[in-house]
Amino acid sequence: MEIGIVIGTVTATRKDEHLVGTKMLVTQPVGIDEKPTESQPIITVDTVGAGVGESVIFVKGSMASRAVHNKDSPVDAAIVGIIDVLECDYRKG
Image 1 (tube, one colour):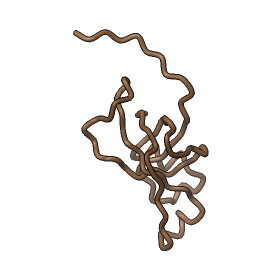
Image 2 (cartoon, helix red, strand yellow):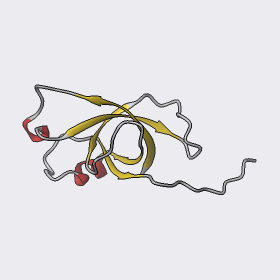
Image 3 (tube, helix red, strand yellow):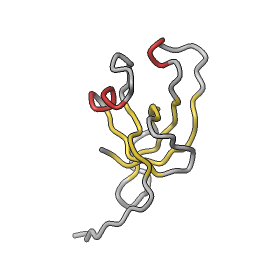
Image 4 (cartoon, helix red, strand yellow):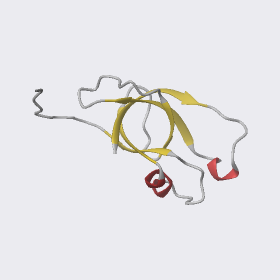
């Protein structure tokens, strides 16, 4: 699982039939400090009702396709949780 912040929405009037009815969001991967990583933003399928500006938990690869209702959907990244609070006691070096 990874942490991200939803930074936008995607509207696609034409898409794979297995994606009809899904909400797609642009998600910026972030580190545990909630600062953007060097990764580019990715398009994620929302399974939990997330919105722009929210911190989320997302999965990629085969785990993402398991998160959606239709297992035949061509999904590579899916939001599986909305973060309410993130507390971490980490020490550098």
